[in-house]
Length: 421
Image 1 (cartoon, rainbow, N blue to C red):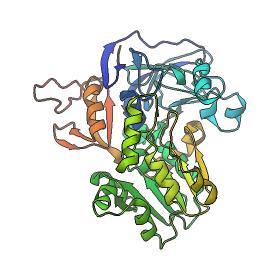
Image 2 (cartoon, helix red, strand yellow; image 1 turned 135 degrees about the vertical axis):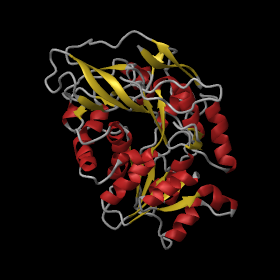
Image 3 (cartoon, helix red, strand yellow; image 1 turned 180 degrees about the vertical axis):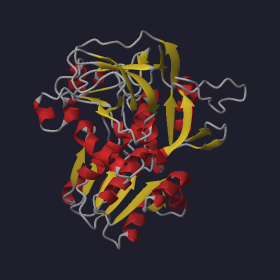
């Protein structure tokens, strides 16, 4: 079968790999029908997540059709359409029993790597390094899904693949970001990053009763989407050119008080300006002195009101410096973050999509074949590139579909052609 494998930094390839197969009696194998490149995949692509090896199949946000069922699986049968959560959980350990599925004790066979980095290991994640289990990811024609009765859920017939796909990761990540921010009716919420996770955090914040949401980004097309959700926006590059900081802009927009809740939906590859941001970039480039660029996190801590909450949904890998601990203590802030507990939210979020409260497919800008994945990564990284019509346009999310033909053109990717699956 074909799969997208990580070879080295900024080098992913589509290669023939051994077929996915049942290894445990609780497994299913699915035929992947849609997958999407997440911002977290760029951290792998850019080489900021340790313990990747050449040949690793990547991808953690995907869905598909069940084609093989292990003898212990009771929830699914061949032919079922399923959403597969990015986090792999056993459903039996203390953490799973308490709804904290991303902290599962039993699914990461390489727990010692994570323990050396973090003290304790969390759950495994599909296609996300050996520190997170070394499981083959979802950017493949077929995927082995362990603990099938715990993770995947059925897709209602009324939903298209693009409506269902983002419930596997981006939507619940944004939902948890808003939930962890402890949003109360009437709150003002600032969200850094208007990519898919940030946009879903904005939508979730409104669903949870926020009165006002302020989106912060530098890409006008993403800020347009945020405004369509009802948010006010800050283009930080534009205000920086005017000598205005994000912290001062947020004070101005909140009558001097600051937002009640701040959500970091950017993570380790934040873009910043000034001396401090440049030092972060140089240190991160060594892959040793500092793994993350916590520029947004520092801003969120500075900008949120006294006694406010900072929720971290952007991924960080390890060590950072210049963290304003004084602001955390002296402003009595609450900080909360984590990989999202997908299994805890999926049923509710699918129901919200089914009820028409939100159509997650609004983040899709590009649809390409699985074999176009290397081009898709470059397009997603640059936030701009040719879509399925060959038009060069802004990119929010790329959906990879195996049944689309690879584009063979000297002019680069053009219009994929639908073929019989």
